Length: 109
Image (cartoon, rainbow, N blue to C red):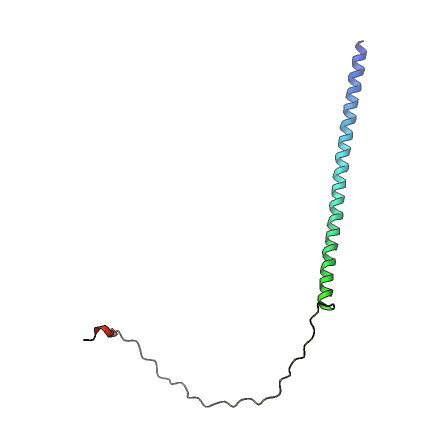
């Protein structure tokens, strides 16, 4: 019966190894699937954004959202105004402020 115990422990070890390998394979497959899903989502999101930008551009440039041209008023040729004779600025300097106190209205007696 001693050999029966060895067979059973060897069989349990093989089963544990098989389950461990199955878990590793599952983990690797999930990582690959997540990477693929993220790539597909990124490409799809980028295409969606490009589509929205293209639609907005088309709508506002050639579609009903385009501004309608309004007629502009063309200015009639006008004569330039003649320069007026204004007095030339004097070259005298402005009076310097004095150090004397300014009389206040209440100080008068």
